[in-house]
Length: 225
Image (tube, rainbow, N blue to C red; front, top):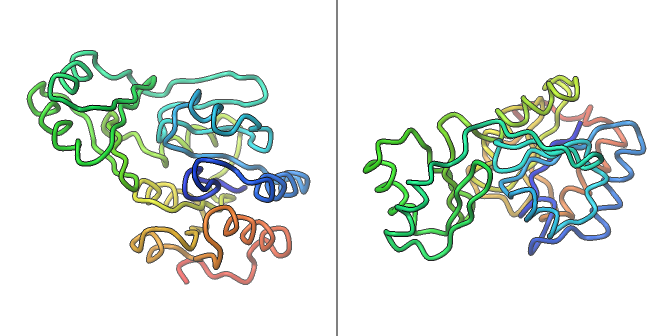
């Protein structure tokens, strides 16, 4: 199974290239499963990537929502953001807010206002960074917990997962599978903990990884190497 981040990993500039989409289809054609694990909200993801057919299931909102592309079914895994928190962020002057079913997102440096609002309201929320984006989620919700819920839903084991990402919020994802992969454009600390760093960036790196999985199931790769 391949578990992929979207922005910065599968996609460049928010878009999935035809070459990357075709490679995902090749992988599915071998009987393997592809899961997307993204910080995006479902509707935003569909707008950016209308054809989600290569993916068995999507983990959205950084682990807070499951979405089945084939049926359009959604499952929310955590509590929605308190209205008072969103209102306080607006009052503190955060200019752009993206409010999902669970996640509240903004751009840096507005994590300062987010942390202030969390403290003022006495909330148990966490702040997660993603290459200039800031996401606020309930404590304990991340890509690893979302992937675990997805695996349970589709009856699969984490021992079968190759996980690939590029950003700070992908540390949990890479730690949740059997094999951790970072694309060439990943942040340095993610590369440092990966079993494999691709030569290619973004989708080209994922295509490279898919070709290796189809050819050998990464049999030549030692975890932790």
